[in-house]
Length: 172
Image (tube, rainbow, N blue to C red; front, side):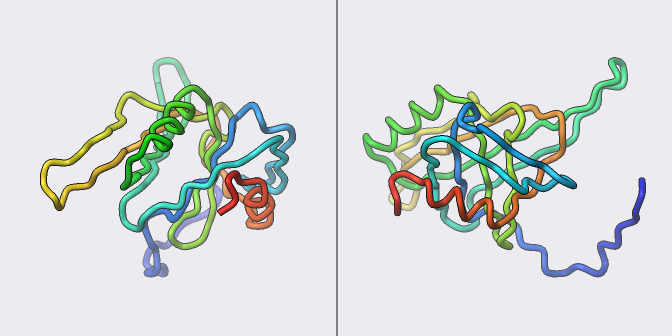
C-alpha cells in the first residue's frame, strides 16, 4: 500500500448510474490508459447510449484472488433495468447478446468508468424478460452483462466520453 484512506471526510457519495454508452470490443482501434484513467480512445463505427431510470441499475467489480494458483482478476457485472418492451428493443438485446462490448458507465455523481475495457462484457444467463403480474409491476427487461478483467476498473476522461457520445446511433 502506498497511501491511506479516510472515509470520515466524505459524506457526499451517491450510488446508482445514469447511463451506459456501449460499443463492440472489436471496434476499439486505439487507446491510452494513464494512472488508471482512459485518456484517449478511438472507436470505429457507432456507439449506443442507454439512458437509464434513476435508482435501478448498477455494476460491481469485486477483486478475486485464487491463492492456490497465485492469480488475481476482477469479476465485472453490469445490470441494466430497461422498464419498457417492444419488438425493436427485443431485437436490440438479441444483437447485444451476440457481441463482446465495452461499457462506459456514467455514475450518478457524473464520473465515468469503463467496464470490459480489456476483454469485454457479454450477456449473462441472469437476464430477465417479464410482463409483470400486477399493474404496478415493471414490464421490461433486466439486462446483465458479465466479464473478467486483469486490471481494476479505469476512470474515463470526460473529454473522451464527450467525443464518443458524438458517434452514438441513433442520435438522441
